[in-house]
Image 1 (cartoon, rainbow, N blue to C red):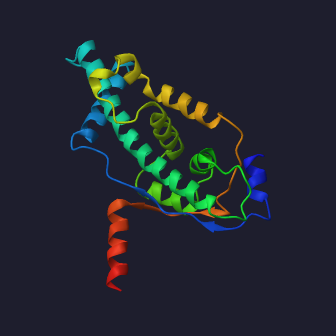
Image 2: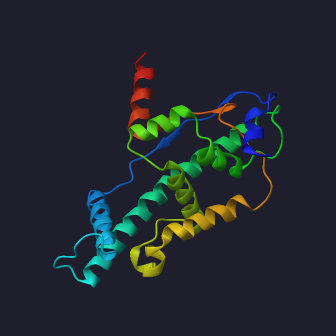
Length: 206
C-alpha cells in the first residue's frame, strides 16, 4: 500500500500515540567541532582558502566533526527506537487495528509523514532536514548497541558514516512487508526531555 493510499483510508481509527521525547545529546565541544568540520570540508574542496592548515589538519578536523555527528545521531536514534517500541506495544493492545503494524510502520511515519505539529517544532528547534536525521539515527541503531568509541571506527567509516546509516535504514525497512500508517490517523507530539518534565511537574501541581 502506498503512503497516499494509507492517508486516504477512511476506516482507520484515529489514535493518540505516546509522545516522542528527545533528550539532550550534544557534549559541550560538539557544536564547535561541527563548525570546524564544515569549514574543513569546504577548505578540502577548495571553496575556502586553506590558510596555514595542512591536509592532515583539515582531514583530522573533518573526521572529528563527523564523529561528533555520529554520536549525536546515535543518541537521537536511541530515543526514536524507544518511542517506536512503545508505539508497537500500544498498537498490539488495540484489537480493532489491522495486522502488520510494525517497527517499520512507525519508522516510515517518522521519516515520511510526521505530524505537522512535530515538523513545526523541529523547524523551531532549527532542524532543517529532519528526514535525513531520523533516517540516519535509526540506521545507526541497527549497527551499534552502544555509542562506539572513536578508536574502533575506521577513518573511512567515520568519513562516510551517513551513507552506511542510510543503507542500514533501507535494509531494515525492507526486511518484510508491513502496513503503512499515516499521521492523520496516528497522532503524536514531540517534546524535549526538559519540556516534558516541566509539563509533568505542572500536572502534578494541579
